[in-house]
Image 1 (spheres, rainbow, N blue to C red):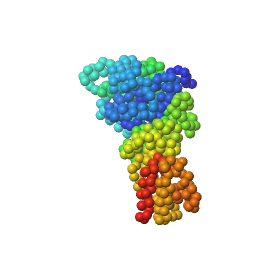
Image 2: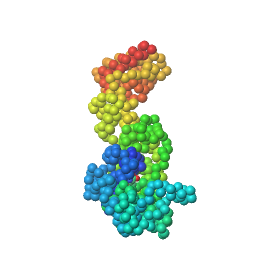
Image 3: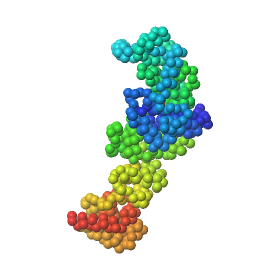
Image 4: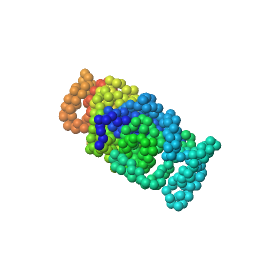
Length: 495
Ligand code: GLU
């Protein structure tokens, strides 16, 4: 059982090879929650030793993503800490030394096989329907010969020397013992010919040197997990607690994102990338709640803030079975958390969307419209089609929509004129002053509220669906409301 009173040191160790996605964000979140729950440390380590897949902007995107999500780092690039540097390319010397240590102890060997030879070996194995594996040629080289060939400038890698017999048992907190026959484990490369380590060496060395207590990582590492355990045992180090998280199943349910235009990185009609989700108007609280529940055995509809998650988080309750990505649930959590935001906070969050859409936003207006639209927002950018009219000088109502249901243009024009008359007689248009005379008019006229208010709504907001009508008219103000109504009358009379 996990001891939650013992401060853990955990790391999120992404490779900067692309956009930060949901899987990475969830791994980061679980590490963060565990660190906070135990009063421990949440560390970022950038695993950038694969130069071929390196994407220069990716590290910044990871930092921005974590920051935006609110997963505050205790140690990492740019943050500092006692165990740095936190970028693997800045730790080359440590890997070289440790690889050499394994060679010296007989747990690893230099391998001079050329890529061409290895390709031939692989082809041959495939022909024989064997699993591709290193054929052991350089395992047999004596140290003197290896030293001579290295001194001659021959290129070499260092491979881990996996025992040929016996088996290895690796223990995962969620999955129990994983036993593998050693003969089925390849002599993996741990140091490449460019002097940089592979993940297998680098991550083990760093986890040890950074005193990581729990390795919480993606399931893709389960297949090489026994190798990792062998490496750690070869060094004689203490093992961390291992946790391989569940995988995400392909999205099901289209959710909100289907009708949106996501960035080029988006896959199909939705996005699994954090930066896209941000642009689409999802908020960190909604995303975190959603991903937290994908792989954590708490009720699927529990609404939790980050702090509440910290309080409740239990590593042992994470689930091993695959989790489905369901975008409808994301919409649900996003809308729910939007409704929980205080007015000024929600105002600050939607403002950039208005600005981005080209509106010049008046803060005093913005704060007034927030309570009127909050219930209707699934994503922040829903404020644009729903409430953009508040910041427009003129609205362009669809003439057909100005015509009240069951009536013609002429009759609708008459209603609009009567409405104009009522409103223009009022000293100002607060919802308290506007609503009673308008309701009285509905009563007297025998028309329905829908018919009368519908015309006023389309005239003043330019839309058939809007925030509460009289509150909206109040915010639009008397002058502009009357101006818009006048224009509607003209349109209707000209039809
Ligand atoms: N750099 C690895 C990756 O991005 C990290 C795996 C781990 O957490 O150890 O997949």
